[in-house]
Image (cartoon, rainbow over all chains, first blue to last red; front, side, top):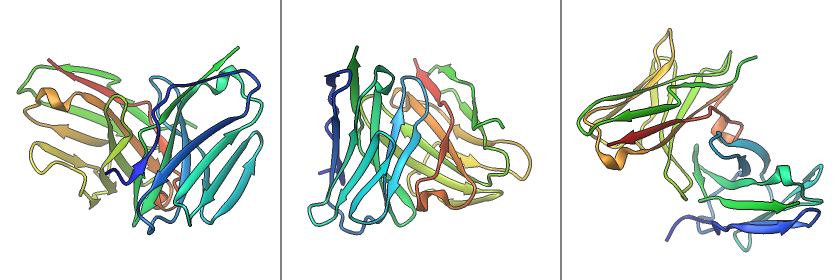
Length: 109
Length: 116
């Protein structure tokens, strides 16, 4: 069993919809939780990181962490075609990042 | 302010040849990380270096792979006697501090290695 599980998708939604992306994990020692966005043929770029349980908002993006359920989410409001990309969750163990496989998101105009 | 620069972007090698991938971190960054990404899979940590030092190479295969980050010049990931299973995208990331603590890593665009 992988330490971090993430549905690879693809997830296809119409423009303007609210998108929910999720990861589950098995190691309760994980401390920091990150979401990265990766466009095709590009390197990942950091979207958000959180430390504690709860919500963190940045513009159209909200990151949610539930440590009791070992579950993290990224919500995207008012989704745009430019949001089409692969979204990877990552979690810190010691000083290594452990990554989910990434969810491919397609926003249809 | 240039980002993380990786070259070559694409590299084709035959089995048994050597592959050298280069990474210049962002200006002022002294922490460099190498990751490997296979299709439909997440990033796999390989090695973490600071100038002239390997801090953590626990993700690096014990044979054929090596990495360095000299005092002057780029970081280099070297793969000797490549095999088809080495075909992947190799990403370099840099950070100002020990960025894996908070995930504030800045990634290059990757080097895609194809082994024939």
